[in-house]
Amino acid sequence: MVAMVSPSSLFLILLFLSIPFSESNLTTDYYKNSCPHLENIIRETVTSKYISVPAAAAGTLRLFFHDCMVGGCDASVLISSNPFTKAERDADINLALPGDAFDVIVRAKTALELSCPGIVSCADILALATRNFVSMAGGPVYTVMLGRKDSLESNISSVEANIPRANTTMDEIIRMFESKNFTVGEMVALSGAHTIGFSHCKEFAYRLFGYSRSTPTDPSYHPKFSAALKTLCANYKNDSDMAAFNDPMTPSKFDNMYYQNLKRGMGLLESDNGLLRHPRTNHFVDLYAFNQTAFSNDFARAIEKLSLSGIKTGNQGEVRRKCDAFNTFQT
Image 1: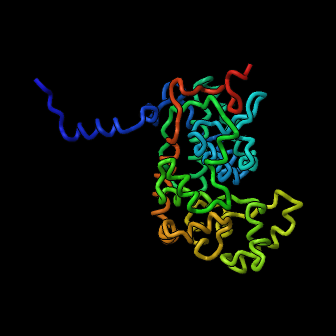
Image 2: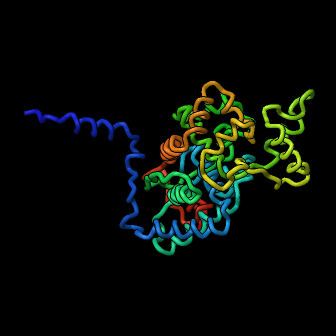
Image 3: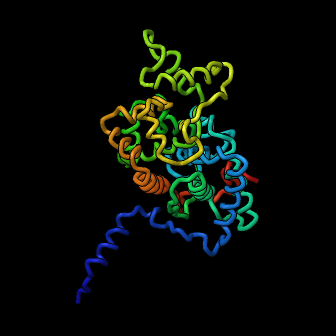
């Protein structure tokens, strides 16, 4: 006799089968029994860092993005180079990743190793810390699935083709995200992370002082905005730390002002301005500039999806004892 399956049960079965195997192993309460104080430790560590260094929110979000875009969310960006391999962390585009972002992960890992040694992966710590920072900055609360393992490799050569630069064309950025199964809309929503944080002057100085022979300053900048940036970045060649807020209006608040700024000619980076100009992205800019709720909801969905990108489970990875070194290199 053949057992009958109800339509609703069939749907759930098909949904489960459509989830990649490694992803299906993740749960929201993965550490419920093995590390019951995980959430409290993450919350206390992130709160302490945010109070002392609010910019750590943007820095950790950027660190998370740079990790997930190269081989998946596996903490490979946290690895320091060793005598055998140059790690992702030493790639040119990663050299400006802020020390406070690395520090908060180290602090959380140290506290967790005292509470539940050898249990919580650095990849999960980074994912949770990012979620908490986004929320503390006023952004949406979203779900983080847990159970990631830490990568067993980190190679500098993997970085360049997977992380867009400030002057990467929008067509190239779209192709980069589509290759990782992200839609154009999801890419534009994730770009909203630029609503907090800053960029160093060297990343956009060419738009101010050397755009073309006939037009030194990019005409897509609002004239008053470019004038202010020229003053701010006048000495950027001698001071590499000089920087400007990505969102000069509400630089520490996770809101939709970033998109409103784009429409005012205040897109700091060329890649920012590209969102407004490209026919496949500009209508998303219009939507998010007008509708804060739409941006918050779409960002939450997109970063949840990003957090599941290329994850490692089981023997695909390990739980590092220290986040900056593979266990085989630790004593």
